[in-house]
Length: 103
Image 1 (cartoon, rainbow, N blue to C red):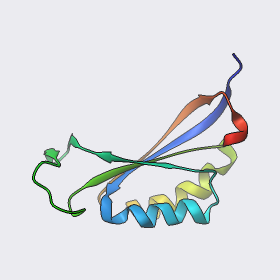
Image 2 (tube, helix red, strand yellow; image 1 turned 180 degrees about the vertical axis):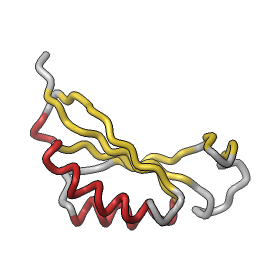
Image 3 (cartoon, rainbow, N blue to C red; image 1 turned 45 degrees about the vertical axis):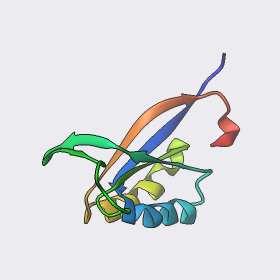
Image 4 (cartoon, rainbow, N blue to C red; image 1 turned 60 degrees about the vertical axis):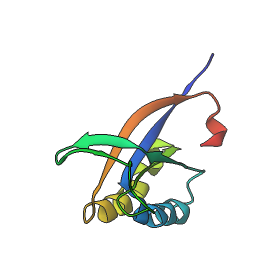
């Protein structure tokens, strides 16, 4: 099966920032994105989990977007500006897709 190279950006932020991340992706007119809840993890400050949390405060979400390499800088720059002032992580990786017209 033929595959096509694309880039995947993963953004992990506290849930209250989700709408600002989505606004950046919408403003950049990305083809789409997916938001997933993060249930537990471990970082430089130790382990954390959602157990006992009420509402979105303290919750973490992961936003995934796949796009063409030519669009990476225009999307990453405003994401980095947002996350560099907040709790969050942005990663970039290579992926292969089977339907390039979707991205």
